[in-house]
Image (cartoon, rainbow, N blue to C red; front, side, top):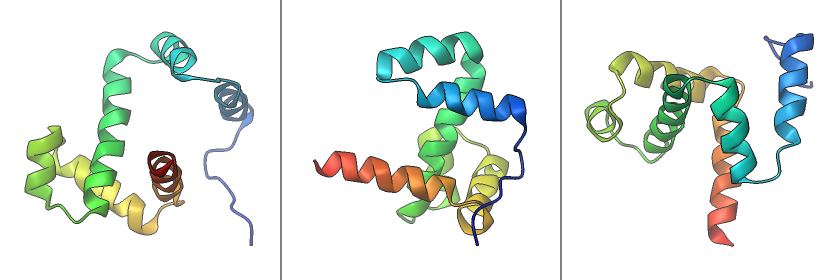
Length: 101
């Protein structure tokens, strides 16, 4: 059974297609600084760090101290790791593969 996104619509599809056209970090910074607020970028970045720390078995209090994330955010990320679309898992596996190169 293939994955069926919950948020799929024309605008989201076009956004994701645009992101896939970015070729390097500089292009990502330029695009995301225009399309997101600094706070939005920080929140998204924080969630990825929370996911990484949850994956290696850190406690909520350790994660809260290391990232500044609230326990509600940590809980939401944890829920996604266990019951979500496996997006965090996919990205973390790709990042780990890059780090091993």
